[in-house]
Image: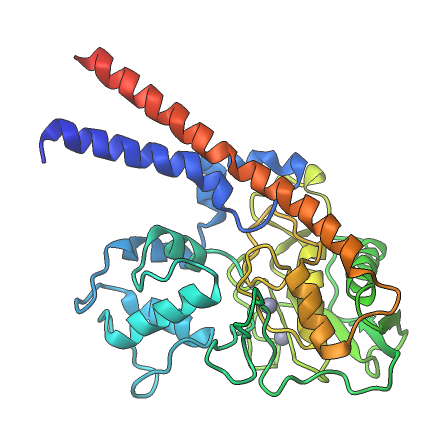
Length: 368
Ligand SMILES: [Zn+2]
Ligand SMILES: [Zn+2]
């Protein structure tokens, strides 16, 4: 390849990434979080332990790449890989890793390339829920019929109570956060519970007694005694347990916010979005492979995703049946207009690409 064509390829690649990256975010940005699209801020939002995965985009099957064992440990943590012997993962890009990548790509709704392509690495480097992703091959897991992307836990556990079900919830008196007022946290959870209660015959009531509440919510740091230690800023944001356990834990080391307009931190995480997602687990839903779904495992900083997608509704109704007062048709129309809005953002991508390409062509013409 000539020097000029190398320059052209490199410049175009940089422009392509610059043009596309802001629109690759899995969730919708709220309007006043538009500062997120500033490139420096994006780079710093992923500057935590998984950011190193970006250097694996050139890893080749059959070859050794220094540090690849870290990626294998990630895949093990989220249910994609078993160590061959003990926990001694090697740095070899072996067939097990290739298989884990393919399963991950299927579970996250990515193109199945079996390679560590840009999309896959970007996804791997993103903050996410600490719950394992359900195996697509599980008999009780992902349903591939139609357009269903939702999953359940093994055995499809749900809260076995006579309908209509009322579940109580409470906040741990010892494990709250001082980043937000108690009233704001309660209000966020009230809204999050209400979204699920609207579509299924399950009601939620706050209980004054933490120990006996069905759903027990707390902010915890590091190792907090349930065998699933949190990892500090970003990385894992929260986790919860399948029915009828009821524990819902948020990583106390995150910068939790309810309004990005009042907090400048690039690593701020929307509490209400994470609460809505974790309540889905508490009710019995696993992760969805649909990026628009609340139950998609990834939530990038400074993004909000609180509205249930059709996939979330269908999944939770498969467990509990529909709320008699709920009308799916009107909900679908609302979801459709919301997704049209999201698609509208994507239409900006080709425009940015065309603009970037034209600018590049012009610059090259002037060089000669
Ligand atoms: Zn989750
Ligand atoms: Zn925990």
